[in-house]
Image 1 (cartoon, rainbow, N blue to C red):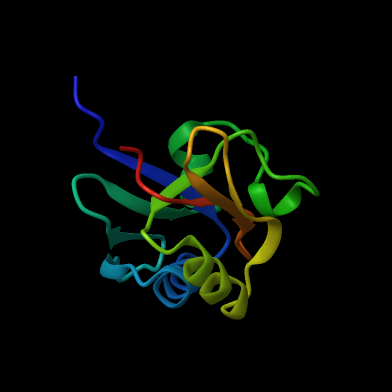
Image 2 (spheres, one colour; image 1 turned 45 degrees about the vertical axis):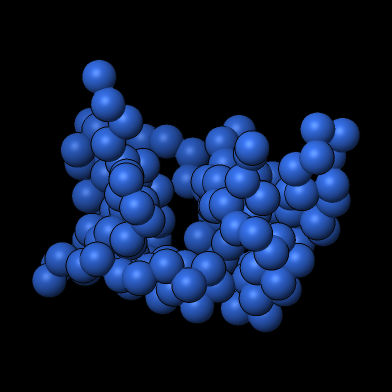
Length: 129
């Protein structure tokens, strides 16, 4: 078994791709001509976004949309960077909501949390040794 991808269900795939490009510097891999699915370049795995209607059709049931919840869902997208403070500031300037400012944890890793306009929770962190 190999971890292949994460798909985030969102209202507007193009807007989420645009936000992640501006806020985190990730490059767009592609956006399907329908606008219902898109991916970002992230390295070994794909970070993808799927429109709610398409996701619900595929699942055959409803779910709690991240942007409909007043609190973040119980999952995060982790992005590693050597400069968490700069990444945090860039994300906030791009429109992310502050959840937790950068803080160095007892194990030595610096982490910060932001919430994207599509409701996704993103952890910005230094790489683990």
